[in-house]
Image (cartoon, helix red, strand yellow):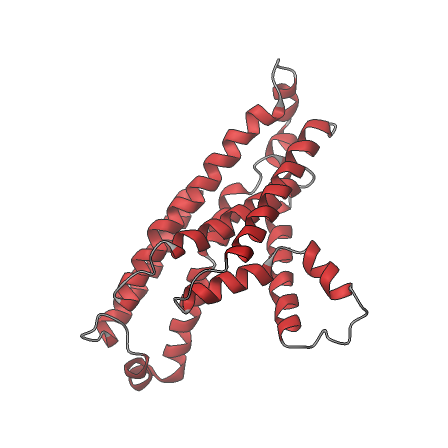
Length: 239
């Protein structure tokens, strides 16, 4: 059902893009926002911009949907105790599951986002699209897996942290945290998901500029560190 829901969500994106293409498609193969403005006013243009913003968060949505309960569900149902009674490690059981679900989130996003770009812009943004998707999937796979070791509300908590990180980074970029005590803004940004680095990657992608590989490395490092922490706590925590 989770896969069907994500696929249905993707189909809505594609149908919306095709509708916009039919209403305001240009000979150059992209959507003319001016034409949309004439046809539906600011509400229609705002809806399309919101649709594009949501599409950029599809890897995050897919990751949260697919990995929700990846460990905590078995703890709640008692299956984890059964697994632990066997002559194997918990890591050997859950690592393939996490990797498979993360790859599924990446694959669904890698199909949808380039397709939508072709519909809306007449072309896709090349391999940088896949890098952006990988950044979101890796970062939030690590975080939700770590939280899943401790709580059943890992998906909601991850979403809360993601939104908090977006707001915090927007405040920082807007200069509203300049008067905060020294180091506080940096420490909070370090603890939260790496939205600053993700924003730089996403901005470069949107403007078709070279990707900031230092930011890409930071995001991937965040995901790897949280995955390692999840593996350590998974092996050491009492069932």
